[in-house]
Image 1: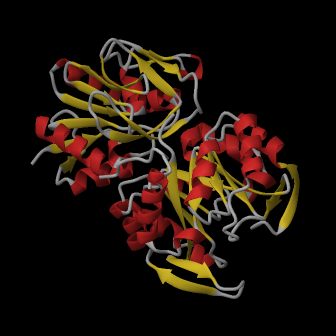
Image 2: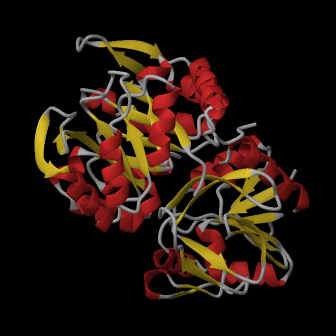
Length: 179
Length: 247
């Protein structure tokens, strides 16, 4: 059984991630250092989220984990926080696990909310965001926006697998089996 | 743009899904978790639960409904009805809802929208607007809110709303079709996603609304029967509406 630590730092969306992992039979733990997989979830604003990570010392734990090759999955804001910086809230330095920055979306309706296909993945996932990664580590896109970034042991997804029905469950299952 | 969305709306009171019967009392039509899961299986893109409880005791069940739905349903859902404060909203999101919707409370105190957006993120904040003849109605559409619909929509956007759920009161329940003119005015006025509500009678009506708006709320057209959603999705696809493959 894969053990998973969900980082709690005052940002929303934790309950849904927890429930999705329980449905897949993962063992939940609070230990970010030793879990097979650490998940950095996130909804809301970059600055207060980054402050929350720092106050709890989770930023350092994640950097150490990444340096040691431990698997980390960042979801939505969790992906954006892993970049070098975000232009949200007048500029917020990120964890620097992945090269690049989060930039405000342009074009279309913002926030970008809804289901959209991801290439080359081929699946359709649920998105809800106003910023997206601009990163050389982008490995999959959705309508031209970064949907998945990968750097070492870090994988970041802009979509919400925990809210993406059967397709999301399949994605999380792959993350668990790789970890 | 993401794919057009179909969003079944379930009215809940006292922890049950209910239906108004000729403005007199409510009929119990099922369990919110069971119905929500069945709609999800039938291909719903999201769900909206609207708490129409009349009493404080009934309202206390709302957070429990959100928590139970989140356990069983893995698509996004919005919870609305009776949310007056940031604390109310946070409780529902912590239980596992993805968005909250506010209506009269935002009209009474528009700064509430900013408070919600700043703390929860815009993507979690839906402002529901009941409109009739281009004017906003409040308190379950029983009162004139002394506001122009387009102006209020713009103000909601400026204050940080993430989506607008726009119900045409004069169409609601008629199954005569959505108020397309109002939806066009709003499409041009704001850059937010708009969820169209009120008047869906057939697949053509929904296709026409989805040509203008990003999502369609489905209430009376479904008759609380998930199988009707499956049938509607097939009809909409035949009409060329690019719905998600939910498998």
